Amino acid sequence: MIDILAELLDILDLERLEEDLFRGVSPTVSWPRVFGGQVVAQALVAATRTVPPSRPPHSLHAYFLLGGDPKAPIVYEVERIRDGGSFTTRRVKAIQHGRAIFATSISFHAEEAGYAHQAPMPQAPDPDGLPSVKSLIATGIPNLPPAISGYFARERPIELKPVDLRRYLEPGPAEPVCNVWLRAVARLPDDPAIHQAVLAYASDMTLLDAALIAHGRSVFDPEIQSASLDHALWFHRPFRADSWLLYAQDSPFSGGARGFSRGQIFDRDGALIASVAQEGLIRPRTR
Image (cartoon, rainbow, N blue to C red; front, top):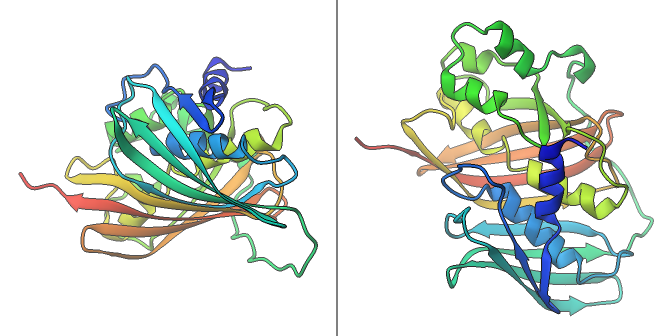
């Protein structure tokens, strides 16, 4: 397995300190703060370890309270809110330096049959027909800002293939829609809980940026102060996070220095496997 993916799986394998108390660490990279998707994924792992495997998670609602310190461990405190006949509810608080940096509620549901429908997957080129951004950067992309090329060239456990790079190459306001293919860079173990945690990690990677497309900006713009404020994730059906998934994102609103973005995640066959919503800070910096 590729080392960087093995490192992610190691980070998601939390240390159990007590019955409902877990400890996680961050990767050994020079990030100024902990990546939000990491905290979402670790909190999901902590909650999942207190629930029988027969009840997978179906929804997660979270708030980012403080920027995390990547050099310090994060303690995850799980509160058992309810164990019902069909649903189980957990609340998780992430703590660093004696303060809560993140809080989430997660609901688990025993699998049941019922009515079914879904939104159609948007039209998108097949991922195998799209070049990797790394290969494009290696051959040279004119007008691609260094911050963006550095982001896509970085080694990471999730492979990203944006359907359209024009928003980075042709500055200016555009329709706030963004489609990205993503998957783990190597095969994952078969445990469904691992695939859910990896998708939770990836779901925070590009979503906030959709709110800035309408303004001809991006989170890479040094004049924008950006941060995830809250995050909601719904799992609809089983999936594999090491197979290509289309992350279809849009932003129906921004205002008051906040942007709201939505995401639908489809597998390659067009099945809707998860939905995401997020509000984030998109504050213009004052000099």
